[in-house]
Length: 261
Image (cartoon, rainbow, N blue to C red; front, side, top):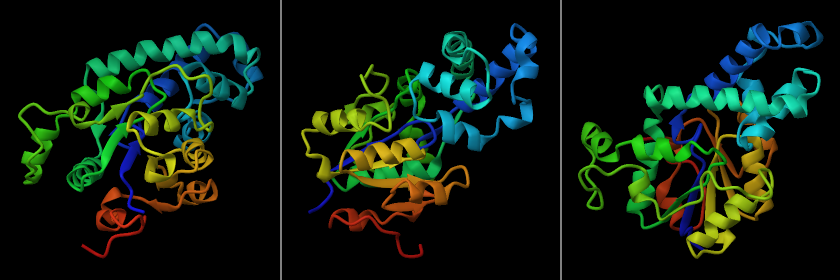
């Protein structure tokens, strides 16, 4: 059965967002400021907050769940209570970074989105982030296609990532966060498709787990040298670039690598 729906996470898949930067800097400010009295009780240091920590502990989780997970990882006392302050500090920083356009889109992801759309596959965005909509509105697909020398009949002047979506459940409040499949099942429902008709594109372990829990095919994008972790989480295919995925095979219900281009 051909895939008729594609569900994309946003942060780390479509855009190289400043979320990790905001989380890291927010915790540094707290540890060197208001929380300096507890710093020695924790395992935190600026160097200890690595991309791997962000991917493994925080990526894909709702804001305050992600904050609590990071604080528990670093052994911060009273993590559940402090997560509110940490999450709010991070949100202030992320808004500033987005307004300053301090992020980049992934060219391989935009090429893949355009190819998938051109193949007649419905597209939805499904991110836990409340800020995903801002990224989707700011990424200009028409300008990207022109720069890349790509021509698609469905593109219009001013078109953004948001404009070509057939569904978007990003930033909603769900009873269960990833790795629960609720967000992806809701996205499939918005496309009026069964879970088995969709594949999910994720960069985080808990996102891959959520896709598989929803009985969907999972495409893992290893943006942080985490191919093995994504594969162990159950991804049906793991790539380091979405240019490596065969769009033609999707029409036949297969998720596989493209031939050498």
